[in-house]
Amino acid sequence: MLHCSFTPYVLDFKTPSWTSRGVLTHKETYIVRIMDADSPDKAGLGECALFRGLSADDVPEYEKVLADLCWNINEYKDCYQEKFKKYPSIVFGLETAFADLANGCRMRPFPSDFTQGKGDIKINGLIWVGPKEQMIAQVRSKIEAGFSCIKLKVGAHDFDQELEMLRAIRSEFSRSDIELRVDANGAFRVEDALKKMEELSKLDLHSIEQPIKAGNWQAMADLCKNTPLPIALDEELIGLFEKEQKVKMLDEVKPQYIVLKPSLHGAFSGTDDWISLASERNIGWWITSALESNIGLNAIAQWTYKKGVTMPQGLGTGQLYLNNLPSFLCLSGDKLSYDVNRKITFE
Image (cartoon, rainbow, N blue to C red; front, side):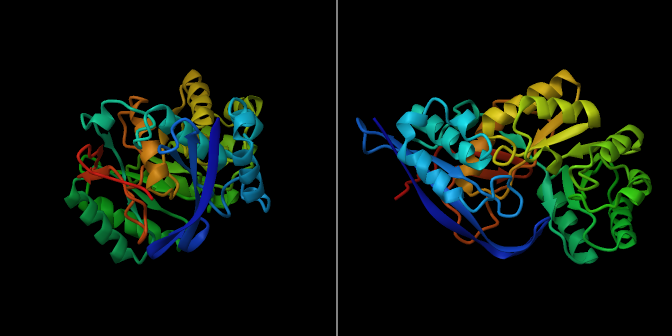
């Protein structure tokens, strides 16, 4: 007999952080626990990492749905992924908790060489939006710290000023020094997106994420066909739960890359579907975290390592929050690894 419960938890940012959803000072999440009645002293932990304003499952009845699942966990344990697939953050939390339970309740839901301290994951450095000189200073700091790939946001300020900033970065650091990715979060207008991307392509960029708003497949398909700069879809994947929807979007838009956030794009099972469909179409992909707590980030990192990734991934480091939960993850340069000697307990 299984028992399942959840606890709301509010993460407080160290400093207000700009995202595509505006400036955030805190983020709500839910910690879920699953235990077997035969071993009541052990619980598998997961995080239902709801992202207000972005998650497809940001709906008024969210807590009611989560409570129903927890209360009826024995009924839903073999079908929750299908039954609750329109609530990807809930499935994400349950998949993590069940995997943790199955692997000894040691915060190692996906054991591998990584969780034995024998492997690491190369990640990109994220540059937060701010004044030009501040962003350039962040780039210098990331390079000095050992990062070889950096992601910057575009579309938040005057485009000419953003171009000037990127040119300043490129004048100081060549492509051999640093790989640059940019993310527009859908900020470009359809009418001038291609022109802006032509300007960006002169700066030796790796790719641009989501240049125009999600949902306009024809316009995005035209961009992907004519772009001088590889396009990676992100928000475009949110809310597509059925395989037929995923196939239709990929076949119509034909992107160069997709960016996968397990807590937003169908949990681990749903993300596996995206990877399979993308691989069949020679579409590249990488994994990105989405402001989860260390519980969710820990699971994403472990799962990502098992995918055998080689290119830099967009994984966080758990350092954004004042009150984050304990973590086994540590960062050295641009390598995310697992500290097997760290002792962690949860109340």
